[in-house]
Length: 259
Length: 255
Image: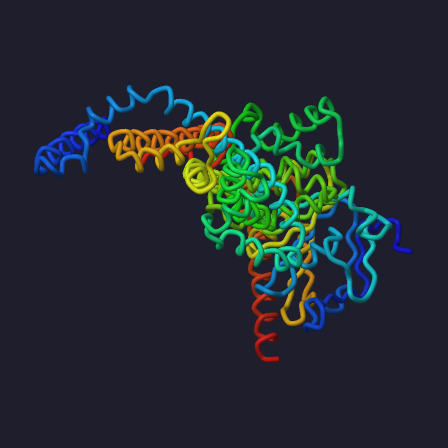
């Protein structure tokens, strides 16, 4: 049994697809409730696969993965996923898009409307219910996507490079908004990113990964105080951590190339 | 506006061409006025023929719509089904209508039923191919989103794959709408019948041609063209109603 303080636990997890080489090997980590954990690493290190394992979209090849004390499939109702692309349905307006997960689960309309209003207010899009996806900017679409995930009141939020396609300014603003929402809701989150700065700003712990097969190379705790805001970026200890994670990342990449 | 001007110019050129021909050859190109007169003089016959053709075209088009949509759904279910059935679909489309027409007459008798069957055949293929393509081209991430939400197979089809396929479906429908009146006329040409309430436009074209009533023949051509416009216009309207509010192709651009 995992300790009571664990909401997600990997024990010696490996993953390979078919007869291919292992994509992930020897993954062991324990996430405490309310923690935000980031994975940074080179392309193809299996970061996204890690999230897909937690989501139960694909199964482990070896080892044990426990989510909320159950198997990932059993815990599916506690999860929400935010993809790299906004993945909105273009034929539905903002309101109906945000309601999609609840609609699929057969939640009554009145109840859907309540969660939708709350979620859209959280991402600053109240009043845009009737807009069509094609009328929104990239940042707004991503906000809708985030709101859609939040309607499920998830225990665990999985974010796969959600801000990767946005411009620097929008990206920064969304990071701050995510921090603010998290302060109110307290879900556990796993965050995949290419950006070291983003990982440090958002996380309690950052895992640096190496590729072929994907492994956890280093774990860096981020003891920066909350609430974290735009000001945090200017702090010395934040910048030191960014340098530290970048250095570990370079070491991991060099080791992989040498091997 | 530009189109109207171009039309007027065309009519003028046409009339000029008529008078440019020597007297004994002017019958080759009757003036637009003569065509209008023929239209008036043969109005009852032409109206009935038009109704018959329209009926055949609509019936065939409707059948193609219903069965085409259904077939596309079935084909989209698995690559195995597609691989197994595609060659026969192709075969159906590759067989020329005049070859099949006598068979249809044999099975369904001459007249409306054969005309509708031939129209159906002509419209079916573009609808099925386009709609199937649409049903299997759903964005992978959207499919994953639905799987994440534990959507049932049924929900995935109705709430995701079908709406996502609509633009493709309408592309097929536009092609089918162009082909439907053509199919009905050709069908009538090769499987029409004067029995009962008389033939359609194709049959009428045959009669006028054998009677050397060339202005009336031109009138048939004009009506056929108008029918084509009617069908295409109707589908364009439908397509705008269904996709206008969300699809990129209808987005207002400032460029």
